[in-house]
Image (cartoon, helix red, strand yellow):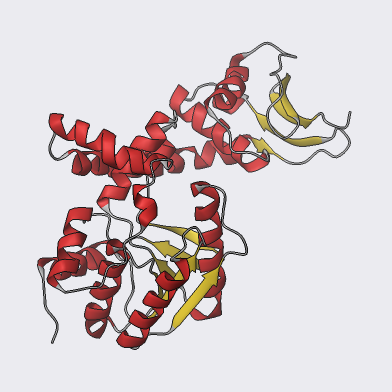
Length: 331
């Protein structure tokens, strides 16, 4: 007998409105054993009769903790009890950082999904979205970083990563787990203050909540507004970007060049986005604020002006109407 809750209704409506998980789709649920991923798995299992999904569970063992193997076995037993296929990935050695762990985890989930699943879902919540926005703000991220955990994005090939719980916070998932007697695995690393996100959660957000008790919701709303605005800006620069970008010039050892003349009449915000896309496509490292500002300044600069080196062994310089991004390492 399903214990139907307001979260069931909330997720059901969200899935219909946002078209996140089509009916009869094959869906791989990433389950750590914590409250958020267990809440998501239980909700999707309860909604399965209405949607006809083919569900399965995957667990990624980072080998960070002494109880990591027991944690994985706990998730495997839950999957068996729910009658769902179970997949496991085990790191050959513990990832050295949060970022490397996240990269490894998505690689493994993508590899598992390529067997027969078109969508991977994770239990990221509104609380995670708020924390990610704060984390990226402190790091000095631009709007792209502040949009923080989008509802869906491409993972690999035609496989989508979907986050259905972005309108549900961590307090709600905890209450759901208590109400439905879900056996939550307590992750000791959540109390490890070496991890920036843990310190944000335990120290910074409670202080901000003194100014606004709904701070998590407010930050998550900001991320959602930024997501829509970034999508609009990206659409606006499609035409000028295609007009401005030229091809490879092997004789001159160009990586790429871009015609600055159609960009000179654009607002600064669009110039920056064009140049950010240009650098992101052709540099070996993601462009930062300084990179974008340097190359944007060349749009109106005198002939033969140039930047100091970017990452990946390249400089940008003005050659008449062109801004040329050129390899310099081997010259």
